[in-house]
Amino acid sequence: MRKKHSNIFKINLIIVEVIYFIAAIIAGFATSGKHAFNWTVALAVWASNFVIWLILYAVYSILDNQETQISILDRLTEQLNTSDSSQPSNLEQLAANTKKTNNVWICPKCGDKNSNTTIQCSCGYINSNSKPVEDVSFKHVCQNCGKEFTVKYKNAKGQSLPTLNVTCPHCKTELTIKK
Image (tube, rainbow, N blue to C red; front, side):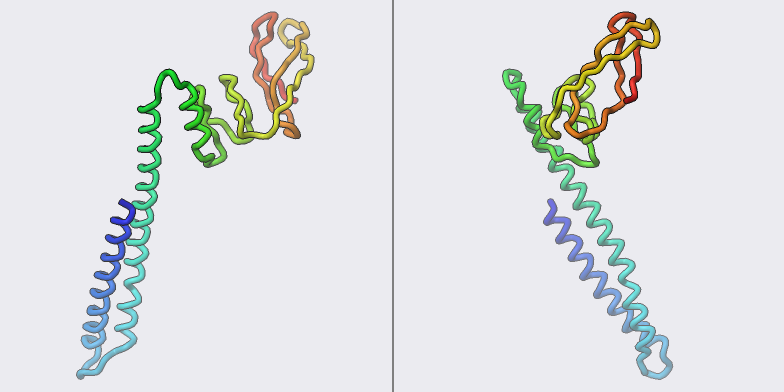
C-alpha cells in the first residue's frame, strides 16, 4: 500500500506541475499587452505551485505514516490472535519485540504503560530490558500507628530512590514515602 500512495503522490505532483506550467504561460501572455511575454508573472504563478506541492507532500506523509502504523497493528493483532494458551510467553515476547517509543514500555503481564525510568510495573513485573537491578530495603516508621517496618523494593543501579506507595503491614494505612 505504501508504494500505491507514493505513486499517487508522484502522479498528482506531475499533474499539478503541468497545470501550473500551462497557467504560468497563459498568465505571462495575458498580462502583457501585445504578444509579449511577462516573465515575472509567469515565474510567480509557476512558483506558487510549491504551496500546493507542500500540501500534497503533507498528505502523502500522513498516509504513509498511517499505513506503517496499520501494518504494525495488524502484525501485533495477528500474533495475539494466534497465541496459544499453552504458550504464556508469547505476550512477553511480543512486548519485548515492540519498540520503546515516547519513553514508555508496555508491561507484558498486565498491559500497563510505564516510564522507561521505571523498572518495575505496579503489577510486580520487572522490565528485563532496563538497567541492572538491586534490592533496596530500609526501615520506616508508620505515621499512623508509629510502628516500624521494613520497606523492600527493586531499583536500577545508580538510579535515585523513587517516591514509593506502600501499605503499613500493621495498620494497613497507605503511605507515600519520598526518599
